[in-house]
Length: 330
Image 1: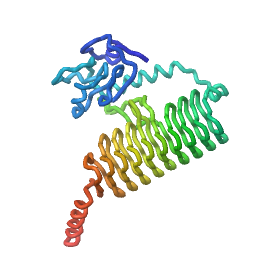
Image 2: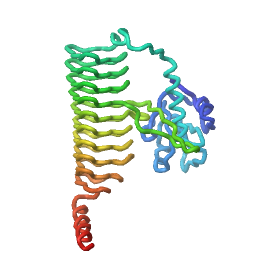
Image 3: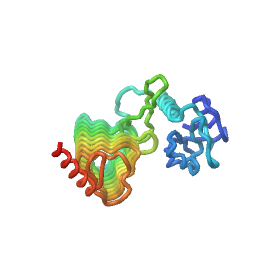
Image 4: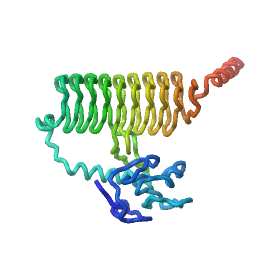
């Protein structure tokens, strides 16, 4: 759908600072802004992106005063974060109104593109305009939503749920009851103490040679894509939140949780029950021992981190020696 700045301002009860005829047809995170996209700026630490952003429209708070020229048209609103949630909600409602669902029927299945020698187990469903590559095996009771793309030689085990718009590469293995593409945990706090759901309009991208364990969940992005890069191996019962990006050939043990918008580097090793906070960057070749709690970015490559909050290996051992000594004295 395409909107002009003046139309968006009317929907959000905001004011236009710039070209009221500026048009957008998609959403993007402010660090990935591109022509034709709408972004929002609410967190002060992202201000530097405002001046370099190539998006045509940026939602900003009314109190924002730029320190440099801004190329994009700005729409000023009371609360940019709440307003983007309201706009996503509006766009989603408009899209839903265009469709008349009458339950599954044969035409939906026949609109999917099925490759050669594909196995489809009983009680599985493939949505409209979905595609499945050659030699892929989809076991019983799998749901594949509309516009999903699954590559060649994949194995999708029983009970997997793949939400609409998900993209899966070649040679991917997804174990039983994994869920790909559910909404992330995104809510905007309102003045009355309630929370407004933020509609998630993005998707999940799983690249080639990835394996995802049973009961693991990978949430779709609010805007853009949640990306699991080539060769990643994820154990059972892991949670990957919206807009997370995991670098090539990283491995992750069970019960690990990664909060939204964090970027994990290449060739990382993540132990069991690791917790990683949101909006962080983890350097390539990082090792996180079991039950490590990461609350800040790790910028130096090749480190082994332990503890909560996470410390480099040697620092942790020195600290642990002090803890033990003090514990004995008490």
